[in-house]
Image 1: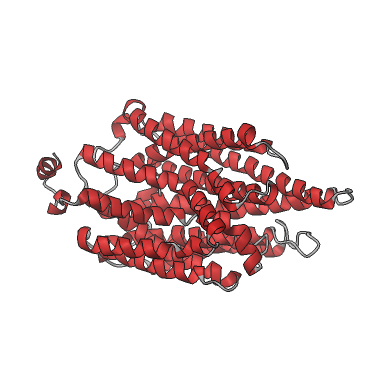
Image 2: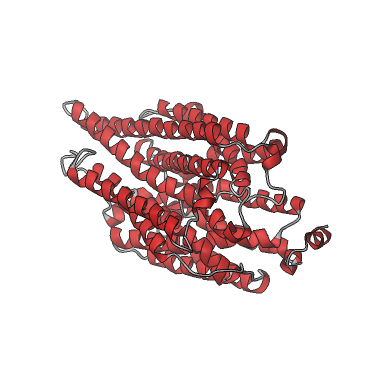
Amino acid sequence: MSHVATTQHGRHELHTHPSRWFALVIIAVAQLMVVLDATVVNVALPHAKADLGISDANQQWVVTAYTLTFGGLLLLGGRIADYWGRKRTFVVGILGFAVASGLGGGAWDETSLFLARALQGVFGALLAPASLALLSVLFVDAKERAKAFGVYGAIAGGGAALGLVLGGVLTEYAHWRWCLLVNIPVALIAIALAVRIVPESKASGNTKYDIPGAILATLGLSLLVYGFTKAGETDAQQRLKYGWSSPVTLGLIGVAVLLLALFVVVETRIRNPLLPMRVVLQRTRGGAYLASTLIGAGFIGAVFFVSLYFQLVLHYTPLQAGVRTLPISVGVLIAAGLSSGLLPKLGPKPIMATGAVVAAAGMILLTRIGVDTAYATHVMPSMLILGFGLGCTFVPLGNIALVGVDEHDAGAASAVVNASQQVGGSLGTALLNTVAITAATSYFTDHATAVDPQGTQLEAMVHGYVTAFWWGSALLVAAAVIVVVFIKATRDDVPEEGAVHMG
């Protein structure tokens, strides 16, 4: 059927590629590798901390070094994929990702691990937008493309939680380093298949790259995360060294804001901007990107603390901790299927807004945790609700994020969908980590005279996690408000030619 449809559209012959469904499998597996790596090291984190001497304040860099370079460079990666060749960019991205994974698996201290994670993010920023762009040229028939992006979206949506399970298995039965090394054989197989099966495609037009924009955006976001991190640093007596009001913290955040403001100015004045303002200033698209940022901040931050809580407080093994995060993935997959069916009937706005509120409710329920909380009655239902709410936001968001985008900007617009979630996850993890450390430090100081200092320390940790969950729920509520206020798309506005899903 797709051969006839694509001929009617008068598109390029790549759209009738006979192996497009096999290509979808290759692309989805490669994208799953990228999504998994945002969370696969979470379960391994306590073991990596012990091996490499990573501090509490710096522990979030294991996640944010990856998500920050990934999100910060996705826009440039989208442009490179469009102009350099989507298949070529895809293959180079996988190869570089494998090399960076090998360096991370062989890390000898915290700095080498953080740098390897950052390098993974750099190549992930090439791989992810190339994957999305390849799907857009392989599938053009409305029904086929809906199926393709449904498969892609389900894998991407559930991948973050599945990464925790894989991380648990590898950490417990092999070594935490295998959470990174496992990417190498997967990447080599994907490269071998992609070279033979995936077709090449390029966008026509100007092929200049906005390097100053990429530097300003990535440096600005990095300094912002670094400022958040400094606010949560503690000394040997578990007292805050800086806090939010210190000149060091405020100075870093101030310079970061200045660089990001300069990025916006540069983007409005150069001929070939990394992020064309026309892509984000359209009301519905801009609202979708902003909501995606807030959802990423709440979600990735929550997963980070759930995995720490399971191992450090409830003393689960890595595998037990990983398996017990599955309700998030189950909730996402159920909701993704349900929202796909409801989208043509209800439109994106009510589904997204409801999903964000439901996710916030799940996060609030997580605040009931304690040092000896029952998993089945307290934690599992909360995660299931959180995952279901998030799943309701993913599919509609992917559908409206490319509404009305010119073909020349498709790569950049696709990258913004991914970048907004990853940047949100970076900022959210750093912010919530500092909030948790600050709350835990305050609690421990106030209860320092307790008879059981070890028990007090556990209670302080839980107090920090609970505080982070409250902040995370506030971010998700803010996302719901953004959806209601900014997104005007109805069911008639959902693009017929398919969607680009968050990854």
